Length: 108
Image (cartoon, rainbow, N blue to C red; front, side, top):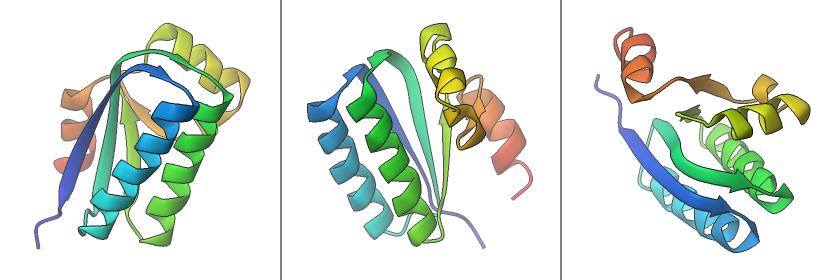
């Protein structure tokens, strides 16, 4: 059985406007049957509270559809924000897509 894996590459500032776009994108990807969704955040420079809310919504949507959501390539600033807000306990993060592929896809 092969898994339907999708990668969504985010960029810029993850704020209220971009957060709403993210919710719509994630909803569409999950509705199309993705089993695993990887959010690649290597181009994300900043996340505000609305952006964090969008990430939590994405995780909730994934759980509702029995999909798995992972995050990779977060900057030091975003990592610090995740740690301060305890989001690092909610999201399984990887250094980059290669590490994700080695640790998640290789065992499937």
